[in-house]
Length: 122
Ligand SMILES: [Zn+2]
Image 1 (cartoon, rainbow, N blue to C red):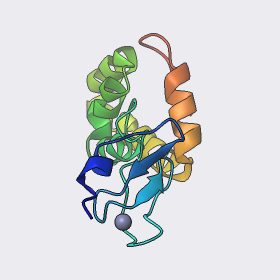
Image 2: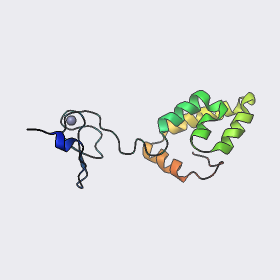
Image 3: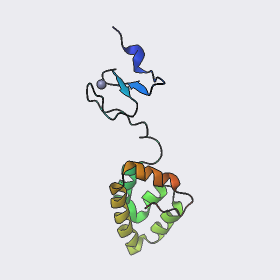
Image 4: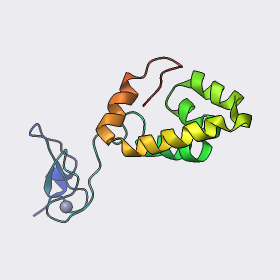
């Protein structure tokens, strides 16, 4: 019995095939109920990554990299200009922790609502 034909199919029922075992898995499922393989999140590549934004804020926040990443280049320039004061580093540290504390859904919603170079995601 060949299963190859089900692998690439995405039916209208919201089911897709597990990339590991080929069994039908709901599109929004995180793990395959049969083999336990991690499924690709349908929203994983939609918009900004919360993890990347957090890492940028924690490691390079003093330079405003997370601001540029989130599209708030106005704040990014402010952070960059003030980086010698170390104030942006402290603010970015808090922001990075905030991003990690936020749920994925909350982060995506807030990121979607950001408009303009001086939008602030909190
Ligand atoms: Zn599976």
